[in-house]
Length: 268
Image 1 (cartoon, rainbow, N blue to C red):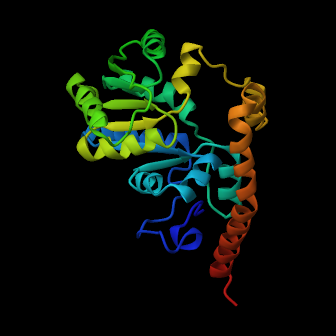
Image 2 (image 1 turned 60 degrees about the vertical axis):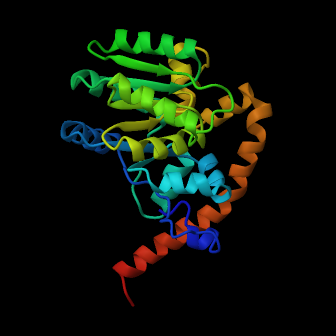
């Protein structure tokens, strides 16, 4: 499903960008492709699409450009999964936080060094120690906590990219939050085409214990957003209101795509 289409959402500012959509339906497909890329020495960049990103995509041209350059887009949020399936496509839930463990295991197995960028120095240190203990053979060679006000495509960003490259890491976990992490990934991938970049949001905070993720039962029931809203209402109330406001439009687009697919299968 085309979650965001420049032609339909903003014809005057499309800049020739392709539509944003989920490109990898399952975690198994994703990990298989990443393993092959690591073996070939080929880089990648993974964005995890949710409704908050859709809102930002409609407002932020830099975010749109960054997203369009990513090699993989997963469904990070039940609404994106449901909308994709309603349109006739296929998608399973693959969140940034849930990608850390399987990617750490893959990197340990393939002797692929890792870097971490974002969060705080203490979060990076703690999460690196815990991941290395959990996945023997995993090596976290760089831990970079950019300062407040970090601009993801600036000279300061170039210095971070140089530090990550000098470490010898091949995969970099980005915990900068959207849209900074996606913009940084696009900027860094252009300079380091043999490195993998994975946007993971608050994933390292969950590992370090500085943030508490929703209980597993709430995640299974698609109620993680309730947990997050109740734990941080001031920051998230406006965000979730904006997400709710775009759902009718996305629902109609999903149905239109489904009807179009059906019409192609059963022409009059």
